[in-house]
Length: 261
Image (cartoon, rainbow, N blue to C red; front, side):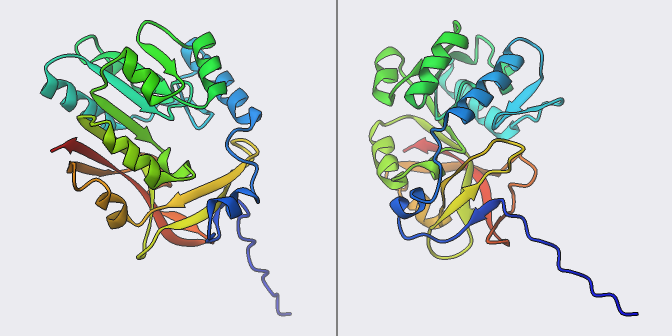
């Protein structure tokens, strides 16, 4: 008797589509500002802060910490070059995910202040539950720079979730920060950017939102006038070195360290 094997069902979560505009993709998604994302992130990071868990990433708790060693290396390098502890701006840094992840490396000689710019509801929670002598929360880059002279800005898994990433980059370069560090930034093989919808695995949280994948050369071209690439590196997160879009392995995440010319 011949047995016919059914095809394995493809995952319904991940990255899909090629949309013409942010508005089009946004109309089909729940968005990044959902209360459930903030609540789950807050509960996870409170456990990390209180010593009940080791490490959090994207609201998920882990029993063993994964270190972003390239990011740590460039933070240390920047501090060494300056010769003084840094004022760091973590744009889109949630409630302090990266801060708590690498806190043991942020010695007094390395970091003077770690400042996060986020959505308003994150700032309210951050100031209430997480702010300390080093960690601070601000509503905007401008508000942050009034309080601290920023030496290094970190953007980890954030710029691909902005409605107008190149408009943001234009403004970012206008601040004249001495060093910019992009980590876990999404790129796609091919000659143009691609706008997708990310459907998050329910084991993380229920959500969907638009996500950019950039053409790498085109992305970096926006910095060539004022910055030079001092380093590039692959993502430390398993499964992000190759990202499937519509079940095709054409996306990837990596990072860049840029210094002002």
